[in-house]
Image (cartoon, rainbow, N blue to C red; front, side, top):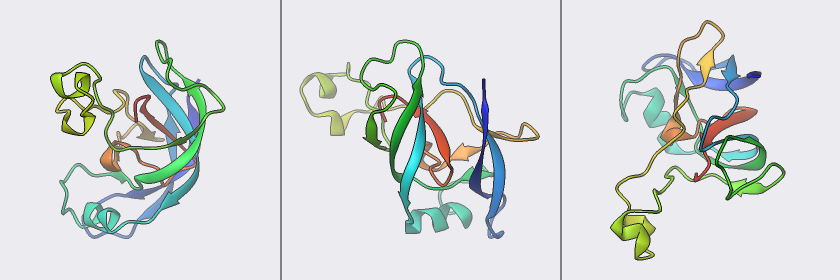
Amino acid sequence: MSQQVQGVVAVGKGDAVRLETIVVPDPGPGEAVVKVRACGVCHTDLHYREGGINDEFPFLLGHEAAGVVESVGEGVTDVAPGDFVILNWRAVCGTCRACRRGRSWYCFHTHNARQRMTLLDGTELTPALGIGAFAEKTLVAAGQ
């Protein structure tokens, strides 16, 4: 069952950010819900708010975070509920040539959660760098 939590959202270019109720869906295959314990403030968040990254508003800000895995979706074996994790903006594929050679920093098949968190009215949010951690909980690809 999806959960409602509070998160910091940039609704439009240059607009003041707002604390909003967001809906975090249950994790699907390859996804995890993380209860955020700490999140750094980065200048990148300002760039998102100012429209300097892209214009996929509204954004759920925050991407430098750590927390505890609350639940995982089908097929997730690398993390489990209760694990403390540091979130990464890139979930590497693990199967491309670079990953197989132990050079995952060259992976070009990175991915994020497939499902989207939303506002209460159903408006889809774009999580900053695929994380969106200025929230009580966030949905990420388990590899993140």
